[in-house]
Length: 453
View 1: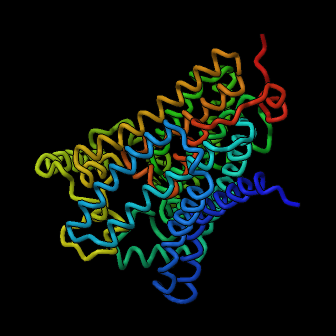
View 2 (view 1 turned 135 degrees about the horizontal axis):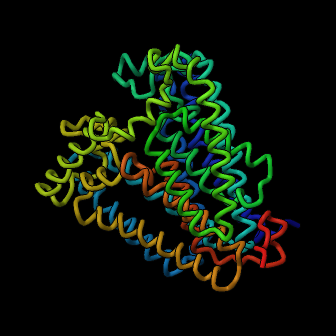
View 3 (view 1 turned 120 degrees about the vertical axis):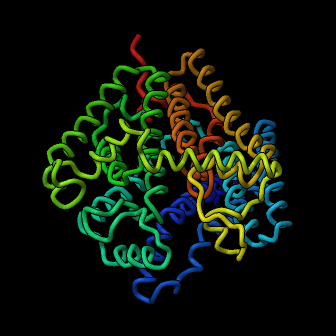
């Protein structure tokens, strides 16, 4: 006889893994099909990750609705209420399907939190399993990203050329090896970089145990993250490392191991810099595109993209003052392509800026309140674990805080709480609110070693 009580959460957990994989790989599957059958032949695949997330959300609510805590209910009401309001504004503005598509992209991942918050298994065991799965997926993404950078498969090259001709999109670089901004199996370099940064941040606790295979995976992710040339993800991961080092029970060891890995990556690219510069970057200076990208941190005052973002943000604030109720969901990005709306905006650099344009001051305030509340709850749980002397659990919450730090930093430059990043964000929220307890006898088997007295 199968124990349905134990089997159901296990099935739901594997369904979550399937949803996560779908968000990661569907773009590459679409590129393969388009390459073979012609572009737009597989356009329907774009909706598969969102559809699978919605189905999982419905099942989670049906199975676990009795396990919703007051904190989870409060976060859900503020989050859903803010986006439903913006969705109604978008619908009334004539955006129709685009507003619904955007609404589901933000609200459906929220129910992932309930899956982890209602878990009965020990918290450390659940965290170890999730971090291992995400690191394994991210390592595969990283390996393919490195192959993509050095070889560039024909289906990826064809997609880059098509995007440049039809959409005028050149943000992913040129369709040549060593001149592409790595996007791996995702749809652009931005989500690829955000996923890799989150995977590394979630596994920072592994710096304390020093096991070789996870460290290799994190190193692969770090190298691929560099190849995306996404400065915001670099800054986000650096901030996450600082947060984890401040909260970890072994900060010196974590920092030293992290710096050693960073030195290896830096030495690798310094060694390769002259040969790479011959094909990409600046051949006269002998610097490749990665070195040149790092140099922009020293010249932000004259950086084109940084100045454009400042101007864009100022314009959005002015527009928000003119339209304090917001212009509604569906006016920005992919969803805007679903509606032939004259005022649609193709892209906005930054999730916070986009929320202000879509949701107005009230909706954007609700959005920010949820982000701050979830961060505050994670800090509270970390303090409780530290006071009780549970070093393993305090490191767990330090890792979750590191992930939320990455996503908050990224929100100033990309949309980092929607779609795939949204699924990852609400996973951290669910674990923060989890009622599962870590047993002291389990910590050693999970790779968390007690701190020395």
